[in-house]
Length: 216
Image 1 (cartoon, helix red, strand yellow):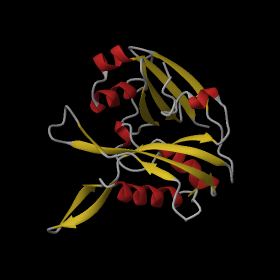
Image 2 (cartoon, helix red, strand yellow):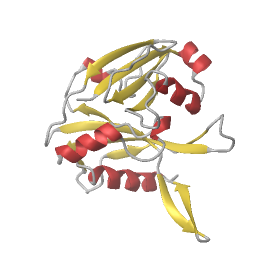
Image 3 (cartoon, one colour):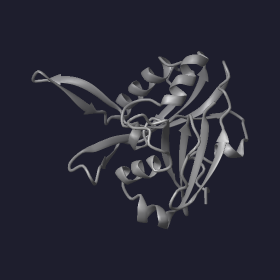
């Protein structure tokens, strides 16, 4: 069973220590012992008015204390077949294209392209996205944001916040994508899926939901 680790950081401390994706990556890494290149976790960052919550889904508990903030650890519930969930995930939507004989990674910018990218990955991994009466997926994709890596020159990632209503149709596939995340740049906070059961009032789960703007 996965662990859900909520790392709560006052915004002043967050800005002082984790002002870039690269620094945040190193901060999460510091909670665990040396596992070489194998990361036992994925994570996402949610900013509130006074605090920032770093939600970490991991196969193991953290092995070191953070230098700032506090952590809370809980066991996540198993996904239920045919259950409906409100989904949110910060993705790095890219595709591979061959240009002048060379393979290049092209970031997707248009919301409709991001929606198609996300829909394909969710529905091929055990999650059925709810449709409206006209057959359109119940999904929203925030405008793409370009984030530069301070320590990596001109290297950047492009992210979009995707939200949808989904149903679990294949538990095994859904559990795998839930544990591993989707897309590229998971080391920098992309790809971790948050699923809140529809009509569920679980405080622990909702605390990590970016729709909860009062997480302060």
